[in-house]
Amino acid sequence: MRLHLSIVSFLLLGLVGCGGATSRTTPLTAADHRARAAAQPTDPGLALARAAAELLADGGDSTCAAAALARARELGASPLRVQMLAAIEADLHGRHREALAGYLAALRAAAGAEDAWAGPIAEVAVASIVEYDDALPGYAATVRPVFEELYAGSRVGPRARWAIGNVLIDFAYRRGDIDAVRALAGSQRCVTSMRIAGPFGPRQLLDFDRALAPEEPGPLAESYDLGGGRGRRATREAEARGCAVHLGNGPVGGPGAPYAEGTFEVPSAGLYTIRLETPNAVELFVD
Image (cartoon, rainbow, N blue to C red):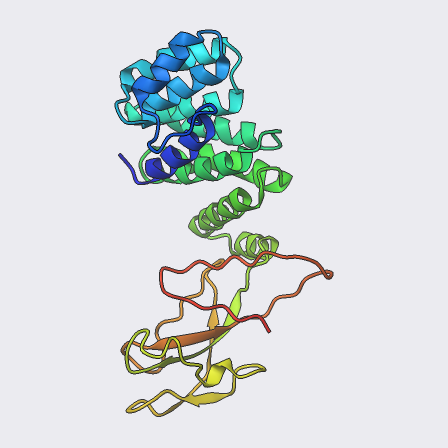
């Protein structure tokens, strides 16, 4: 089972796994959901919860999920959530082309849907779709038109749209279409060029809680002393690959703390979200 299904489990059990007024200290099991659905056989929410539990909860039987989903659909349960669960059911049972089509359908359904969970479902659907890259023939030809349509429409929520944009950037690189890469990176408002200082040594995280020279107000200086045995080194420029900037390949080998300075503009005063992704420990300064 792929890693993203653990995220799906958290998301969808949060959607449909809530109990009634009685509080519990443990999650509901698949047996609990079956009993609830049996006690109120015409309740669409309980039917949907039972279907999700067969796929994702402790004690679930995924071979029963298709019938449970059909019952939830018959009772008028949320089409968006039923579609997402149907894609997961196909995924779990190895019907990968059907699963890909299902995730794409769920993503389309989430676009503009009046559902509190439309945004998270769209984001998880994109992550699930990406898992099929290099796994199915014709993947890009199938996914690219849907992603381009949804990206242009801006109706899938900011997180899913950002993820879609990153996939489209990768598709553009594969085609050798650098103009498309630049256009997408611009529409994503990515910082596509940075000035890099460091790494300041001698070890990773050793000085992470101590303010170093680059943290002084104002832009980065032209050069810095990087520490014992490293001497003074010039601040360098780094260009992005799409929206990703690699901070390595500096003037000094070995571990340490690099600093990256980027500049962006906003059209007017207001609240904005800065999205920063890295597998490393990081601290963000906004000047």
